[in-house]
Amino acid sequence: MKRTFVSCLIWWLTFPLLASTGGWTESFESGLPSTAPSTTTQVVLTTGSWTLNQVYGKTDNGSMRACMTQTGAMLQLPSLDKPTTLSFQHRSSGNYKVLIVEKSTDGGSDWAEIGRVNVGSASSYGSASMAVNEPGTNNTLIRFVCQSPTIYLDNVTVSLSTMGDEPTIPATVQVVDSTGTSVRLSISGGDGDGRLVAYSKTGSVTWQPIDGTSYSAHPVAVDAVTTAFVSLEDDTVEVTGLEPGETYHVAVFEYNGKGVNSNYLTSKVARLVVRTLEVPSLLVSAGQIDFGSHKVGTSVYRRLSLSGRFLQPMSINSIWMLTHEPFSLSLSQAGPYTAELELPFEAPALDTLSVFIRFQPTALVTSDDSLILFGGAAQAKVHLRGTGSNTDARLWYISPDGNDAGNGSFDVPWYNLQVAVDSARAGDTIVCRGGIYYPTFKKDGQNTTVRLATSGSATKRISIVNYPDEQPVFNFKHQPKKLGIRGMLMTGDYWYLRGLHITEAGDNGIKLEGNHNRIERCTFNYNDDTGLQLGFGHDFSTSGFGSSNDGSHCAWNDIID
Image (cartoon, rainbow, N blue to C red; front, top):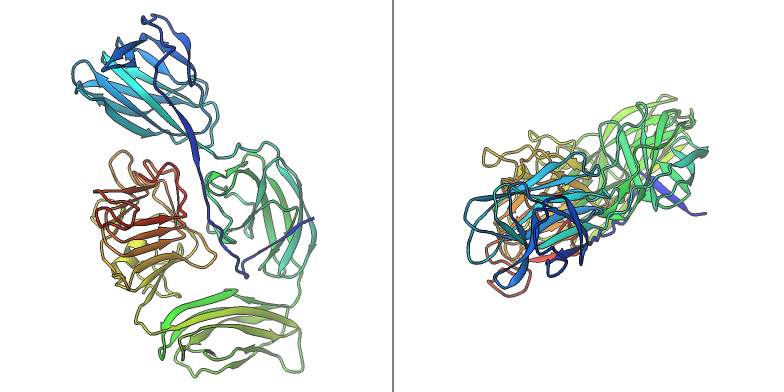
C-alpha cells in the first residue's frame, strides 16, 4: 500500500507536463464516387467511412479532390474521438463561395457551427484551420456544408487529443484516523488512472476539476472555499495542514490521463465528512517562505500569520519562535529584530497575530533555515530560504487573491499580470502564486491580452515564473473568439517565462514577436488557435532572422506554429 502526503504546509517538486496529439490527413486519392449521389451515401476512404451527398471525386490542378456540386452538398468525416482542430485546403469555381463547417456531439441530432470560409478561385489552393475543442469527447461528428457551389476540398487534417477517456466508476473513501491537523483517508475502487482529492470547510464540495488541467503541483485553493490537493494513484492519502476541531467535507474525483491529458469523472464523486481532533495546535499561514534573490546589505520582509488552538496551560504560558541569521523576527516591521521571540498566551488559545520575518543577506550565498515554533504542548515549523546577490533586481508578486491597488509585494500582491509587466524592468522577476487568474486589465483599452513590450538584456532578462511548487493558470475564457485576440503578445526581447499554464485564449495562447526569449515548462490548452505561435519570421533556432527564441519542455493543445 502506497501513501501520499497532501499538505498545505509542505513543498513538493513540480514535474513537467508533456502532451502530444494524434490525427490523420485525408487526401481523397481513392474511394470517392465518380458522380455525385443525390442521396446520403457512405463511402470508405483511406481514413475510414465518410458520409456524403452531392459530392464526388474530381481531378483539379493535377490531383483528386472532393467536389461539392450544389448548395447544401454535404461531406461528413468519420466519427472522431477527442478532436481538437481541423484544417483543410479549398478552392472554388468563381469567387465568394461560402463553406460552413459544423460539429455534433450527440450523434448528429444537433449541429453547431465551428467556422465558415469564403472560398475563392485562385490558381493555388487556399488553406483554413479552426478549433473543434472536443478533447475529451468521443464519437464527435464534423461535416462540411456547401452554401454556394462549386467548391473543391483537399487534405482534410484532424488533430486528435491524447486525453484519457472519462472514468465511469467512482472510488469509495473512508477515514482511517485523524489528528488535530491531519486526516488519513483510505481510497479504493474506481476505474481511473488516478484520483484527485478536494476538501472544503464550509459545506459539500461544489467545485469540479476542469478536463485538461493538471492539479499535481501541490495543494492550492481553487475557489473561495475549496482546497485541492494532489493528483495521485495511491490508496492511502494523508491530508495535512488542517485546523483542529473543524469539520471538513471531502470529495474524491477519478481521472484518466496525465497532466494536460487529464479527464475527470465529475458526475459520480466519492464523498465523506470528517472532523479533526481538538488537540493543541499552532497554525501558521505558510509552511515555507522563499524570499528570492536580494542584494547583499539590503533587507526584505515577509508577514506570517500565527494562531493557536486548544493550547494546554504550562508553567510558562508562552509560544517560542526561534530562527538564525540572516533571518530574524519581530512583531513590528519597524523592529527591533531578534533571532528569538516569546509570545504569551492565555490557554486554550493564541489569538491571531502577525509576525514579521526579515531576510538580510550578508554574503552571495543561498541560506536555508527553519523557523521553529513550540509551546502549549504544540509545535510547528516553517522553512525559510533566501539568496544574497549583487544586483538591484526586484521581485514582484501577483496572486489570485491579489488586488491591483496593492504594491506588488509578497504581502500585498497585484492580481493582473499586466500590472506587474508594466512595472518590471531589466533583471526583475515576476512571481505568480498558484491558482486561477481571469485577466481583466485592458492595456489597449479594448481587450485583455497581456502585452510584454518592455525588453530586458542578455545579462538581465525579465522573468515571469511560478512560485515554487505552485501552478498559476491564466484563463482567458472571456476573450472573444475568431478575432485574433491572443492571451499574451510578446514583442519585447530577453524575456524568460517558466511554469505558466495558459488556457481558453481567443486566439494563440502566446504570440511571440520578440527576440532572444525563452519559454520553458509552460503548458497550453483549450486555446482557440495554437498554444505558442511565432510571428514575423521568428523561430526557435539559434540562428535565422536573429530571433534566437527557445520554447523548451513546453506542452500545448495543438502545435507550436
